[in-house]
Length: 304
Ligand code: RIB
Image (spheres, rainbow, N blue to C red):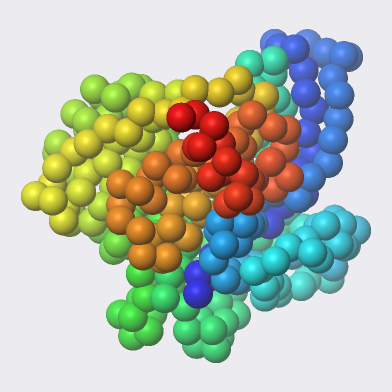
């Protein structure tokens, strides 16, 4: 069983032809609302990949959480353990998506900032997962609690470094798998990471012994594999027309965790996770664009 410890947001997205300049107003946008948050997106991706998945999170007792709960009612394989607060709003994300499918996101964390180590500890003890997935839209003391319980309960940790926080450097050596994008890699390594060669270069000096993946969008994924003598390999991306890149990294992290947990090797897990992300970016929204495993397999079959 996979347990995702993470954020839940309501995503308010406006699609625009281009991003506004500072001080400019653009009036031709089109709006939609969707459940989101990196934690929820990753949990949904893992569940749609076919693995039994739970999400431990913190939300407000409000219309946003009602909307999200109702939306997820028929989600097979997904159980949610929320802490519900009366005096905090559910997390809110304002997202702009341009014609090229690129996004700009601002989050007001609301109740996500209240997720308590105690609640997470209790859920970990009750559910006894074999995999735990973490990202950084939750408090650092929660991340520390999970790391402390890792050896006691003997689970594997997949850590997604999104969005970048300076405390990541204190704990990056502890998880089994680390997934970062080029922006986070740039902060973590203090080097420009923008393509395959610069990602390979950054990983050459990585001092720790866990597996690291740098996701590079259309440039694919670079993996540092300690199991294979610290071999660094590149996995090209699948080519698709990008409609909305929101949730692509979360889809990758959720699918990767589900595939590794299902016993697939690193290479196959990365391949399936990249295919799932490719389907995700070809559609609109975060949670609503994450594919079921049958859609990912059919995408791969149609390539041949
Ligand atoms: O990674 C995409 C997510 O980032 C969105 O769903 C938004 O809520 C923010 O957390």
